[in-house]
Amino acid sequence: MEIDVKVATILTRKAKPPLESTTFRLTVPDGITAGGLVEMVGVPAALVGSITVNKRRRPVDTVLSHGDAVAIIPSISGG
Amino acid sequence: MGATPDVVASLEGLAVRRLEGGATVPCLSYESVESAAREHGLTLREVSVIALENGIVPLRYLKNVGTLGTAGQARLLRSRVLVVGAGGLGGGAVELLARSGVGAIVLADPDVFEETNLNRQNFCCTDVIGRPKVLVAGERVRYINPEVDVEAQAVAADRHNLPDLLHGCGAAIDALDNLDDRRALQAACAAAGVVMVHGAIAGTSLQVTTVYPGEAGLEGFAPYGGSAGGRGIELETGNPATTPLLCAAIQVQEAVKVLVGEGETLRGRMLYMDSADWTFELIDL
Image 1 (cartoon, rainbow over the protein chains, first blue to last red):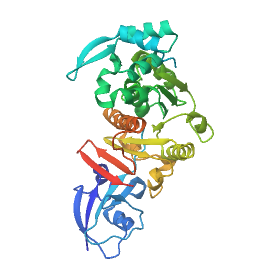
Image 2 (image 1 turned 180 degrees about the vertical axis):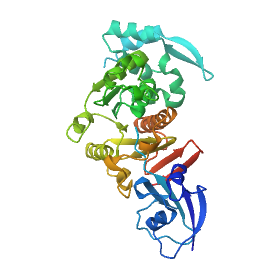
Image 3 (image 1 turned 45 degrees about the horizontal axis):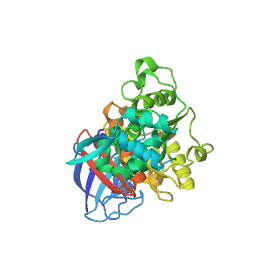
Image 4 (image 1 turned 90 degrees about the horizontal axis):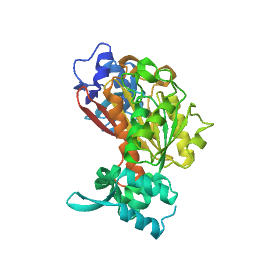
């Protein structure tokens, strides 16, 4: 199945390997979770602040469906 | 507060007419507010509130009332807000709250200004390095708007002192710098029935959400635990000059909406913005 992925700019540079784009479509195995997707795109878990599925914040164990839009937002806490 | 007919008549006598937004508005200069306060034994803020409630606008609020209305401005002057943290976010928030005319600001932060604060922290100047941030902020606010009371508390807000700090507040601004303390503030706000406006920054990124008591707010943040000490990616990006003020402005805008009771807030939603590429994400929490 396919997922539309959006990764915050700052996280694209931290991904291993670095991502070339902030938005892309990814073919993923059926039953993948939001956390599995984070692992697949190589974003370091400690830098993840929020994962959204279709614009709603979701836990890492959320099972994704074909056509979902997932955004990975960094953990920011400066003041 | 002594809103007697005498006081109102005296304010009407002192008012000057200004053409504003196509209408003639009776206005009070700062000098007139001061003289009325002396004559009637009132505080400056009490004079402004009485004036606004009788359709007379102190000039310092003239450009606010087109948006807030005189009743909204009077409501702000009667409001009290806790600002936790007097750094990049807190310094910006305090100035904007004072210019908005929020009547009382409680400001808590145990730190003194350091040279590394000079790039972004609103009240940090070369001559105040080494001085407590909350005291400097209080002094500056007296120049910006002497009607505003600043209660400067050079303490770290924690679960023991937060109930007192929050007493009487209509909103709290989260201007902290780590998720652990922010969560403690959210819990204290929930217990005290106070709305918390969360803001956080890193590099060119910011996020803001407005958390009402009992709502999830920060609970789902950093699902993998984040970095050590509740810090985020700002440990790598730093915090350049512009982002704290952008974020503080959005937070104060939220607080004003909460206090005045008008407008659509970020309740149940979080704005994430990155000014490096103009990413705007509005997320349901």
